[in-house]
Length: 93
Length: 88
Length: 308
Image (cartoon, rainbow over all chains, first blue to last red; front, side, top):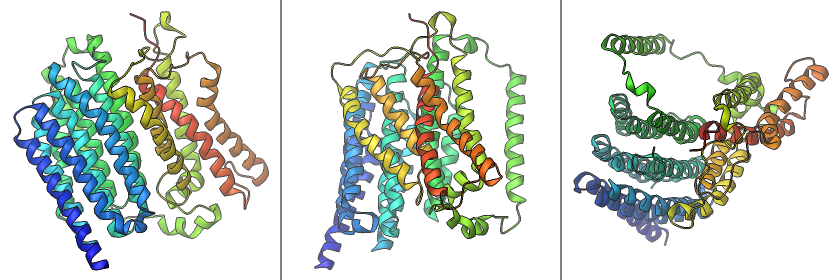
């Protein structure tokens, strides 16, 4: 059982890393600021979410799963607001 | 498992640092502002991974602070940027 | 090891790009990235308290302060009209290189292992009732430094306010922000401050046993207040408001009063009565958090400005 949980957790973290790498690739390769913003926000925040999911089984080591989820919620809320602001800025210029 | 988590934290940091040249080169201000977001989220992910790996709750507190202040810095920059809502 | 090399290389690259940046906005944006990277380095060095402070004050609030300065300079481009001449540029470069070389020499000249008071701190920490050695140093062993630091913030607010033009005195600090009817910033200004206040209280309270404390908590509170202000959700009081001035001065004043009390009862300034150290320290921490939060926000927002 715990082996299965560990394997699934590692899979989620690995997927999260793939999203981080994809975000970086998009940041480097995409032609304009709007698409780079898309790469950064989508990939980073999905990547962070997957990493948080992967860490949940071991969350007791850092004070419980609620704390990890709180970090993710904070990042989601703030990036949901920062994204449109930056996109508008990119379009205006 | 803890070792693997530390490796993952290193990989996240590496991917953030690899993305930095875009931020340094620009060309637009939006690319520069994205630096705070990139470093913020990457740093948060690395802190969470390292925190669980070493069983240090303080890392999660640091991630919380980083999440709040990186968001504040991003918003402040988006408003103050040339062309932004609060630009001169 | 590889992670350390990456962080160090990134810090150097971003620092160089910050110095070489042409526009002031670009330089500030890169400076914020530099502050975030620096906080990663502090985490790697095991100095979590310093990392938290660097992320909160170095990157977050100092960044916002510099953004405000950059846009003020852009509005009144007096300084930009006369760029420094070549001789001046070279002199500045030599001066900076000199300071850097002196710092490097000082670091390299340190004996190995470097002199440390850590064993004394660990041996005497339990007298304070605190579990975080950094908090014990800041609030007890070197309490005087912390007292002076917090008093400096009061003086800084007075100095910033004294730059206000006469016709805008005593208006509210900064520009009046219109209330945003909707949109991303309005949403964030409603959602984030309640969460932020919760995190700030948590960071303040755990500061006695774990990394955290008043400065980090105050930086978060100041950022949340400014976020609500940016979206027009809270109006700032005029600088003549009594409560504003009382809050800014209360923390340092209480700290000084407690210091004098220690002098009367224990025979030394800032000496805490045995057994009462922890409650006294926590009361001072809470009062200082309020004072520092308001002072930091007032410094970042700046003095009252002329209505256009």
